Length: 389
Length: 191
Image 1 (cartoon, each protein chain N blue to C red):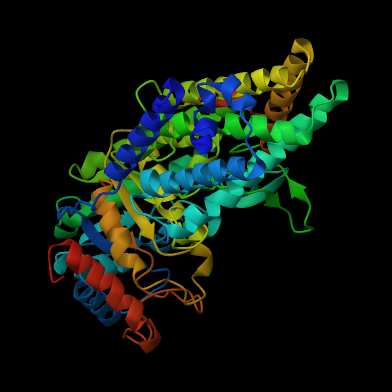
Image 2: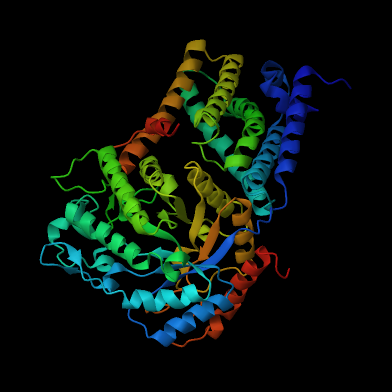
């Protein structure tokens, strides 16, 4: 039986394909340099002993780095007589950060410049909020000069307060924008209004008529602002890196990708928040393909990448759904993909009932129903650092 | 060997059209394509075999083949007497262009996921591969139509109508999503 030319060519192609695919089947590389940690959210006053215990519990959970969310409204900013912002009260910031730094845990500080509630700008007026989809939404506009002044002066105050202190040495990064609202309407998720009318997913960062309505002009202005914020931080905390964090859907829509790339040029680190379980279940390649694609997109900026939030599925925090073998694979893949560090979301509950968290700040213990997942994350962190297999 | 003749139809379309292949042989070739696509998705994107995906990719491939064949048949039969079975055979062979497509895309997806904005020249590599393979599959479809006595002008018309509707559909979808701000051609800005 002789083989014709066409048959020979297709057999050759099939052989090449099988060889290529067999090369893709490889064990994941271990990277002992991967930093591992947790998100900590503090949104209200807590006493000193709670803060001390929180730091101790973090250490017990193999935490090397904590992304600490402290909304700037906790600083109780005032408007001074000369119209500038000032009068910051750092007592809660110090109370939370000092024990964490003392435990030797590195800190990524998250001041949460996002919603009006997170910032609580003392002289906030309605015209400082963004207009999107034809109505005002409760997010101060990054294009408004007074909002910019609030963010810049607050960042400078934080940096100056912690400069040349032990806490300052442990603040490895400050996040300037965390999953900013300007991107949330991108992606292939169709925006559905309250009355269930489907509307287009794309909206300008700010639709106020006195703002230039060119999309790329607005992107450039926001990126310029992020650059200014980064400079303000480094005036005092020279060793601290600056960061912006992208939500996990940023890559699904070209305008959203363009926005993020413009921001990434202005900072030292890139944060991404993959919730891989949001994609069609666990036992298929899509979670990992999605995760890898996020990392590859971020790698284009040639800057170190952090996974600033990870968990199974953002929409499932209220349920008990994470597969127990997932943390190990996620952490191993993160090391393999060249990510610099990973922070599990979320370590402590912060008042919202039922929110997925490992540690109960009120009860001071790991709740029994969370023990399994707590151990799974802790063990995954231990193993990736070369500990017990 | 007749299965091999179908598989090699992208290199020898005339011989493949003339061969006395029956429906089950074409289906078998498509099952093979589907399992290769499933293996490809699993291994090149996630470095692990996910059996569920391999199994799932088979009916998806067969369904895609049936839908594309049906659309082309509806368009072609307006001005010809081509039968659905003949179009199914043509597309069964055109679908074999998946194999060189997977060969060319594997190193790329293995390195970069499906990130179309990467790989040296940005979008250039995946775009070139896609266009090359698409042209290959369309040429085979054209030759198939000619083999089954559809006029050259109408064969070309069917393919142009088919491609136009796909591009137009994608453009309308993108315009809708972006409230008219963006076009699918904005993807080129990612290069």
